[in-house]
Amino acid sequence: GEDVEQSLFLSVREGDSSVINCTYTDSSSTYLYWYKQEPGAGLQLLTYIFSNMDMKQDQRLTVLLNKKDKHLSLRIADTQTGDSAIYFCAESNADSWGKLQFGAGTQVVVTP
Amino acid sequence: DGGITQSPKYLFRKEGQNVTLSCEQNLNHDAMYWYRQDPGQGLRLIYYSQIVNDFQKGDIAEGYSVSREKKESFPLTVTSAQKNPTAFYLCASSLTGHGVGANVLTFGAGSRLTVL
Image (tube, rainbow over all chains, first blue to last red; front, top):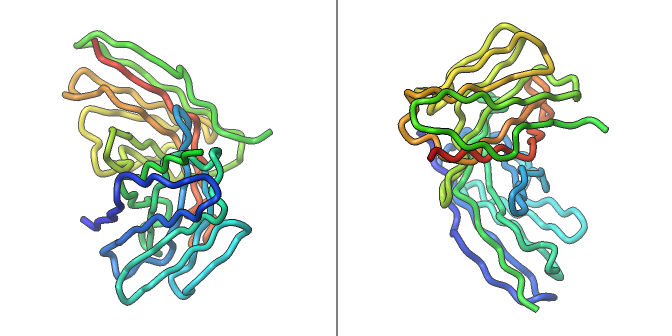
C-alpha cells in the first residue's frame, strides 16, 4: 500500500518555530492534510493543501509542498504550550475520497 | 452544535466477549468511518460506509463488524475473533463526492478499549 512517513518526536522551545516533516509515496495524491490530536481526544483538521499548490499560509501555520520530492511540511510560528500535541500528516487521492492514508504522527512537545 | 459522539469513552472487555462501540453524528454527513489507533502507528481504516445500508471493509476489517441502519449511526462491534483488540478507536464522518469536503474528516473523541 501507499506509505506516509513522519518523524515521531519533536521538541521545541516556546516562541520558536516548529517544523514537522512528512513524506509520502502516492504520486496521485490529490489532497494532503495536517491533523492535530490532543491527549485522549480525536483528531481535528488543522489545514489541507491541494497537490497543485506549493504553499498555503493560515495565520501561524505554513504548509509547504514539494510534489517532486513528495515532501510536505508544517511550520508553526511562535509555538505555544497549547501547540503540544500529536500532528498527523495524511493524504488522499480522487479515487480514495475520505479514505485517508495517515502517517504515524509526530509528538510535539513545547518547553517553556 | 453539530458533531460526532462516541461512547463509551473507556471500555474494558474480557477475552472472548464481543463489545459494541457507538458512533452518532448530527452533521448530516453521508459517509462514516471507523479507524483504529495504536501507539506509534498511524490510523488504520477498519470499515467505512458511504450510504445507509451499505458499507465496505477497510484495511484491517478482520474481527470487526459494523451496521449502517440509520444515516446518523455507525456502530462498530469488536468480536472475539479480533486477536489484539486493545486500542483507541476513532469514528469519523464526511461529505461524499469528489470535492475537498469529501476528504475532510470530522472525528469523534474516541473510545479506548482494553482487553483484560
